[in-house]
Amino acid sequence: MTNLCAGPDPDLRPSRLVVPPLATDSHFHILGPASRYPYIAEREYTPPDALPSACRTLFDTIGIQRAVIIQPSAYGTDNRCAMDAARELGLPARVVVVVPYETPDKDLDQLHAGGARAIRYILAHTGGLPLETLESFSARAKERGWHIQLLLKSHDLVALEPRLAKLPSDIVIDHMGFIKPAEGGLEQPAFQALLRLLRGGRCWVKFSGGYRQSEQAPPYPDLLPFAHKLVQEHPDRIIWGSDWPHVAFKGKVPNTTDLFDLLGDWAPDDATRKRILVDNPATLFDF
Image (cartoon, rainbow, N blue to C red):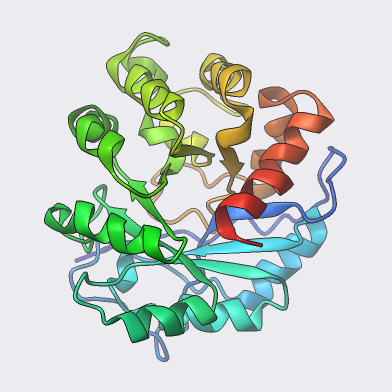
């Protein structure tokens, strides 16, 4: 039996920050209706509907004007929901898909035309692609200007660092690599592995899912040193994502605007926030 997810916080309000034009949410999911887009049987969670209309209302409230839809594990390799949502949102949209390596080029071309720009490897949940295809799929991704996106745990980041450093395409690390402050400070192996990958010039990191990493209440002060270190060293390699509607989270579901407003502490100046919200995703996702 799968875990039933709570829905997102219904409290919608504008950000306390000045939101730059073309601000991008680079990590969120569209889910349902299940009657039209059924979930895979071996999923770990069952979410309530999170439809394009609700997402658009949220984005209009905050000031988000570009969108990157992430294929969730609950859909396996069926990308129809995300691809359809890219058309239905009414905003410039890109999609990160999960497709088997055997997918023909013509099918990848069709996905590209619909907004796909990356392939996602999910290690943190069931339903992901096998790592045996990582190197070969990275080469195919590079050929069409795509990248590889990875949802992994901190110990996976350490173990996979040598392979990730050699991939031909760019890579994106979701949720700051699930690095947990409780497992050590800035010198912990996973964070050092992330910094080395970023210094290699083909890695990007996502400011997202902080509520999944922190063991403290909002605004998650234990994450602040990690965020400041990343902003100090690699402001040109950071993107931001809300992780809406916050599936598979067992604690109190966070307010999405509160998560956005964390950027006021993590990246305190307007110019850096513009890079994270506008310039970096425009480069990475070909907006």
